[in-house]
Image (cartoon, rainbow, N blue to C red; front, side, top):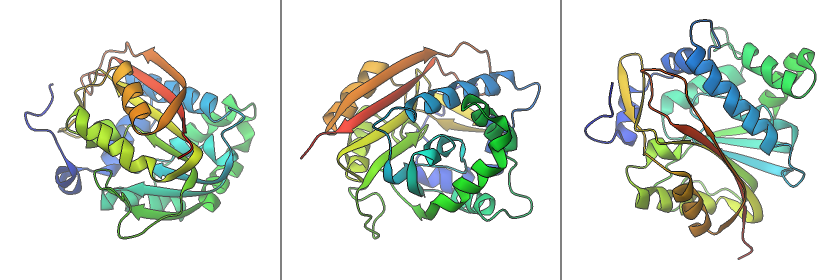
Length: 264
């Protein structure tokens, strides 16, 4: 499999992205999907490590490009009082809201939640953690990272922290767009606040359900330079190689990054 000839931008997601098929492919933690399990567990460990840093705590956390997922909030929910989740694609927000409302037929995140509870030292607290996430997510809103105000026409007060996992590389067709998107989402965090990112490196596509989506092929130094250029100071930046063999993506590694927004 290879990357689409034309980069799959926002409208393609709105028309073609099937959140349930995506969740089943990448987050079901099922046997026979070792490549996906390794990818997910590696990212969960990175998020656990980043959200264990002393300075990562506060009132509000904004999740930029949440997709239909909650894995990126499982460590974060212990450190922030309220969470606002943002995504461009309507069906992703609907899928997320289905889980938040604990509706019948919502995706089963229990194996993932249990894994994070294990990282935190108490696997038995999984039900409590699910409830914590459900209580703390106060709003689920539409966003477009290519706009100067990503949540327009809504204006959000700047948050203590923003988290963005596997989002910008799927939304930005080239490096200038990526840099611009980082500047745009940077406005959502207050000076002195933090940015937490999980970004795939060297990846040109990801696929599921016979649909192929583009990914901007990034290197570690490019992401760091873009973050600095958006008004942040990089505090932690760790790239881990990804060596599993799969036809569902061509990811070479994953970057976990924490940065602090410079006082304006």
